[in-house]
Image 1 (tube, rainbow, N blue to C red):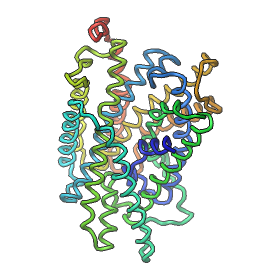
Image 2 (cartoon, rainbow, N blue to C red):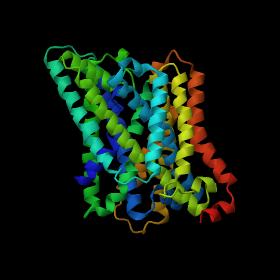
Image 3 (tube, rainbow, N blue to C red):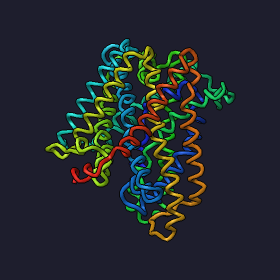
Image 4 (cartoon, helix red, strand yellow):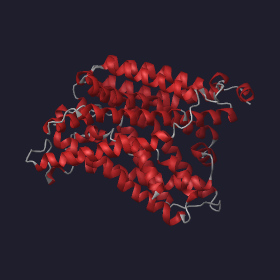
Length: 452
């Protein structure tokens, strides 16, 4: 139960709800399919790896494939956060707008300012080695997800119970998303990001008394809870806000504002906004130093990064990595000011984040199969059932999601396909493959010695 709740808190959030609410009843299908073909294989495969090899994804991929592939995997785990923070803080900006002035939610300049202020404040807090930040994550699940999510679903049900008509049709004909060619599949890609991070929780498999039986049960329970947290608020939003009016960043607040207006209690909207913002910022702080710490440790051992990026400040924090990451985040934040539609910018950065992270998962699935074949007798606390089949499904789903991400979604009909492709390909392939390749090719023996 504890592992299931911990997994739920690290995966579930209200942030993707507006993206799926556009699809109404079909959002159930769009959440369940990635859960089966990606969430489940990821959870079970990473559990076997974590129970046999300590050291996380770098150790798994290095042992299973090669050290350069291990560096690429840990780099992608870090690099995805460069685009994750602007999309997370874009959500914070639009939510905060409803506390101050709802018109600001569609302002790219406002969004860019909030992203930069919040990120650099987070760097300042993290670089001081502040203890107790990790406790914000569990509080964030209750304050920013469970309470607002439950309230949204309950008020949405009361809204329908009073005789109001649902904004999205709720008939059996709408259980599947309308097919508009390949572009209609693209929104499934966002759900792969929603489910990512399962490999982080796999390290706890050794704490279970009977991992072979208890871990799958914990994962199925977590999957059920995650699906409830994702699906019910998305449906509630689709009942209240028409799809054509829905903002991908401000949709949660739009729904709260509309339902509170229906009940004559709009004064509650800013309070919910503050709760959501507090939880998102807490989540950002807990994530800020983690992935970069893993990259730093590997780089110090193998000399993958220049000495400047390996330096620690007096609090033992990799401040230089956070600052360089912040400069890139600032450039991305400025893109919000120049891309006319804030929702479009939010979507593009979410896709890039997903694609960079999926490169790591592709390597993880290949490594798992190779480790089972090369070291069949290596002690493992947990052995995933039908490992080759699980890895095959997970690999195929990850590759398909990565490729589909290059297709503009049906909502981007008016935009330039070339510009969309250039931004997504430049972000995902440039940051996910080209940058680590250059670091690896240009590395010097002195980088390793200096770090030591």
